[in-house]
Image (cartoon, rainbow, N blue to C red; front, side, top):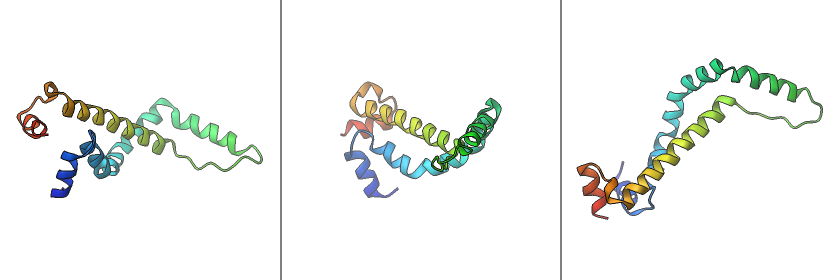
Length: 112
């Protein structure tokens, strides 16, 4: 993290830190979560069901080709959700002094 990053986080929108971490951590999070999501989808039978649906879809003449990956889709939505809620909490911390529960939060966000 550079000093410019820090300045942009402090002076930017209410979800600046969240957007910074989304940019830096989305790929590592997806990589770490992939085996967990794969296992959960397999255990739930979602992968087999998805494969059956896609097999039936592709057997229909004249339909456009669809390149979709269930695991990738679920990962994208999960990461979107993580950062959505993280951004909401960040905004609440910036706007509401009561949410600043640590000394560092009070020091950093109290100065804004």
